[in-house]
Amino acid sequence: MTKKICITTLEYPPDVGGVGESVKRISKMLTDVGYEVHVAVFRSKQRLVENNIYRRASCKTTVQDNIYVHRIKSAARDEVTEVTDFLADIYFQLKCLHQTYKFDLFHAFFLVETGYVTTMLAKENDIPVINSVRGADLHKHIFNPKNYGQIAWVLENSAWTTFVSWDLQKRAQVLVPSIKYQSSVFWNSIIPIDFTSLPKPALIDELSGLIIGSTGRFRDKKGIEFLLDACSKLSREIDITLLLVGDFVDKEKNYWQHELRQCSLGDKLKITGILSREEALAYLPYLDIFAIPSLSDGCPNALLEAMLAGCTIVGTNVDAIGEIIEDNISGLLVNPGSSAELAAALKYLADKPELRHKLGVAAREKALLKLTPAIEQGNWLNIYQRVLMSTDSLLTNRVRIV
Image 1 (cartoon, one colour):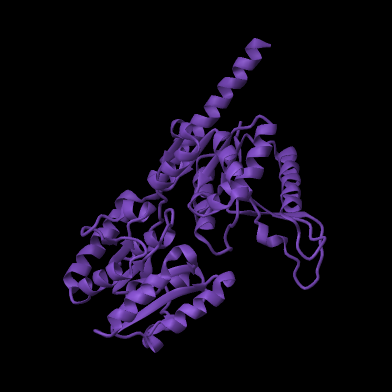
Image 2 (cartoon, helix red, strand yellow):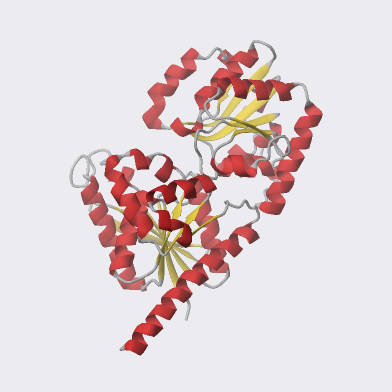
């Protein structure tokens, strides 16, 4: 009988975000080997009322590439829905989905919101649950006292927990020491990309000098202020362009406007605004250096995409960035939060095109050999089989006892 999996996530394409891309990739892997995959998408920011339009809680289901996608919305009964009301609505909608489809396993991406509601439903129905830690849940949300107990409870009650970096697993073990016996660490994978088929980027003719770039939805953890400092310093010595492919998150707009006013790059700073994934990828082959100055970052897809493009990478020694990039072999690593180290690394590479090419080739080769979907698929299948087999054995024993 086909096993039915329900994955819960904060985002799923066409939503922009690395977690959504990962969930789509993993869902496709699972359907390819015979699982029936359902993806339930919800997040708390959707609880806000827009244009005074109130609504009932709802769940809209579509089928994309043989994957059932359920987009859940909480009710909007007031201008701002309380988090407790939001979670209660989401729980009810997930419960209805389970009553309809009879899932064999739940899998939540992100411990807060998705992990808590999903684990609660799974435990109440004696169904195994896998929780996947992505980064911000343990790097940021853990510092909210209201989240601490919730996060620890989810970790304790997971049949299995996955991490995208050893740093994240280490932090989880501080909270729940026993987690090391029911968890594993492995990096995200990246599907090969044909960069030659992508359109010419819109701003490419406006770039000059040494082109330093970064991509993503820029926010606190990305460390962009240190990149602004480093490039401002470097621009006084050589001709450069700093290209930010993406934009700053709305809730931090005022902070970043202040930071941009403080930097001295002027028209040497280009910001594209939010683009489609294809439009963003098209810029990568034109970069002389790809900078990823994160303060914490899980296993960012932006890094893997830059590696596939053969970019010369300067990154910080945090999470999977510091685990994947080998210093002076497939890129350069600096300490997070250091504008001086970042500036020194960029300056060191500026007049060394041969070294930049060598580092870029090594990064691409590692992506093609070590970050393949086949490796990630093997890791996921091992976990799913382990969890489902343990559950089947438990059920068999219960039947024998009865």
